[in-house]
Amino acid sequence: MKIPAFNQVALICDDPELAAQLSVALSTKGTYLPVLDSPRLARPDAEAEVIKRVNALADANPKKIILGGCAERVRQCFDNHVPASKLKRVDTASDQWLALEGIHLKKGAPLRVSRKSIGAGLLLALRAKRQLEFADDASEVRYVPPSAAHLVVCEDGNALTQVIAANYAYAIGAGLQLISTPAESLIKDINERFYGATENRHASTTSILQGLALEMREYLKDLNLIGVQSITFITSGIPWGFAVQEMPTTWCPTIFCSSPRTAAT
Image 1 (cartoon, rainbow, N blue to C red):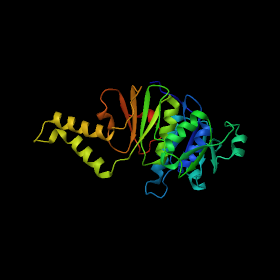
Image 2 (image 1 turned 90 degrees about the vertical axis):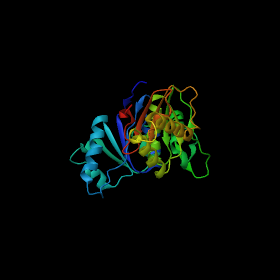
Image 3 (image 1 turned 120 degrees about the vertical axis):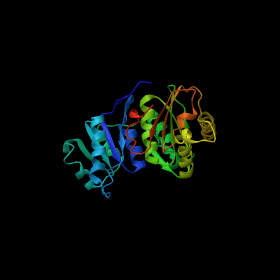
């Protein structure tokens, strides 16, 4: 799988719907648009929050950083780290702003998508270069087939993570499938059994791991692997790739998931 180049623009945004609309406008084929959440400035380690994002931006090295719907204090926190000329605050994905930036979308009705499956809807909009319209009563789309042989699998519990997953899938020509975010109790149970397998004196490590793989595969029973040769999982804490041993997989935790390019194999 070819690693895409970074887009010349990076996006910092906490509103998933605005992030999706801006993604359609800013994304370019064959490049990855980095999407980050804004620093959580109310935390005791607020400066560390800023530095994390500054480091991620340094990796992407964009010419412009769009602050989507961010408060002025978010812009100010980057003053000592990023040249002011690189930063631009945007509150909407308005046609007027897009035109001023020389950005033109295809004319026609926006693509109407469900808020519950924002990632899959975004990927369809990116491919069609159409703007998005969100509706609670729109039909859910949870699977978009790949144009290449790679599939990005993303848990549905965090809408902004879905936006990140869709941008990554678009950059590499991958498909996207949403899966239900498991309960915290299941995440804890699987990880405790997985990482404690070697300490169990009542069963062999092999049998424990085989059993876990079967349980995890059952959870992924609706995964569409037609034409798929490799997978990236963007998930909240379970190494799902262990259950799909017939092909290469990578895993990127959803925590501060700004760039699946760096996912561990």
